[in-house]
Amino acid sequence: MQTELSRKLGVEHAVFGFTPFPAVAAAISRAGGFGVLGAVRYTAPDDLKRDLDWLDAHTGGLPYGLDVVMPAKKVEGVTEADVEAMIPEGHRRFVRETLARYGVPELVEGEASGWRITGWMEQVARTQLDVAFDHPIRLLANALGSPPADVVARAHDRDVLVAALAGSARHARKHQEAGIDIVVAQGYEAGGHTGEIATMVLTPEVVEAVAPLPVLAAGGIGSGQQVAAALALGAQGVWLGSVWLTTTEADLHAPALTRKLLAAGSGDTVRSRALTGKPARQLRTEWTDAWDDPAGPGTLPMPLQGLLVAEAVSRIQKYEVDPLLGTPVGQIVGRMTSERSVQAVVDDLTRGFEKAVDRINRIAGRSGQS
Image 1: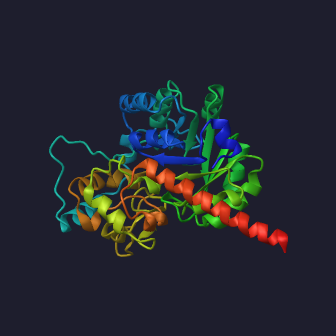
Image 2 (image 1 turned 30 degrees about the vertical axis):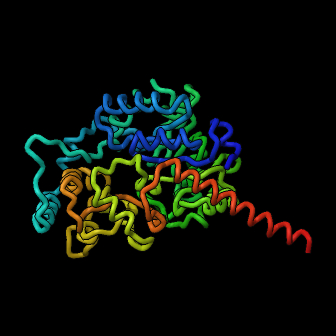
Image 3 (image 1 turned 135 degrees about the horizontal axis):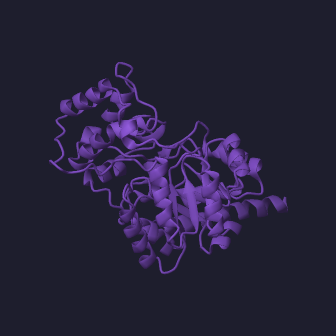
């Protein structure tokens, strides 16, 4: 599964694996893919440094990347406290009442929320970059579009490629104009923040729109046959996130969540603003239903919603409150039916890819003889 892009980065397979878990990212790189560590949950630079140091020690010199979340436009002087003050009391009351209805215990006094997304704030993301550029990352990806121009220049000065996610050809062209090196065409089926266009439609549109920039296909890809389809559509690789959630190296801290993922079908996800304020595909739960109910207060825009629900999500996960327990995940969850190692997942991808290529070659051979 090699392409021009994978050869440029020195990886065996054109499989780019996004994950919040350092052990998974390292295992993806060791298995011949390209591991990408998500930075959004790191609020302390020392914590990110610790995990990047760990990655350096456990990848054997193989390449890996970092995914950040930062706006393209600079916003000066806005603190987390300023944003917190914008959250209406009615929304805070709705959170308290929902948690009370399901008997969700409080965190232990003095225990900080383990799921406080502040990485979207520019000053946080920039401190992450200060740490990251002291490590041998080969790729910097941004989930909120093109990073600010000075960040792109800083990455290029260090020979680091820059990738940005796009949900439409129009977005992809903006990335190209901003000097981005790789566009990730993320379809409607994907976990996390997505647009409205399905991967099968989006990928060739983006490939055509930004040629000759390399494009990675994302969303609804969890088998080697689907990898082959993505490459046939013009992509130079695939960007996978959901499939790693049920690997043995993942650390969800909630066995009940793993069980829910393994039992879920492809129709058990929903695009909801409940998590961050932007449409994000995730397991459908009574928590997402509560926020999507017209009788409720409705979600707040990003980043207010993420800050509002951070402690609640931590409590739900810590105490594994099953009706409310969920996570961002794509429609490919229906294929995630057993816990496997990262290596086993990559092996399955390569075998399926080879079978798909052989099948097409046989069809093409017969067509050529007719």
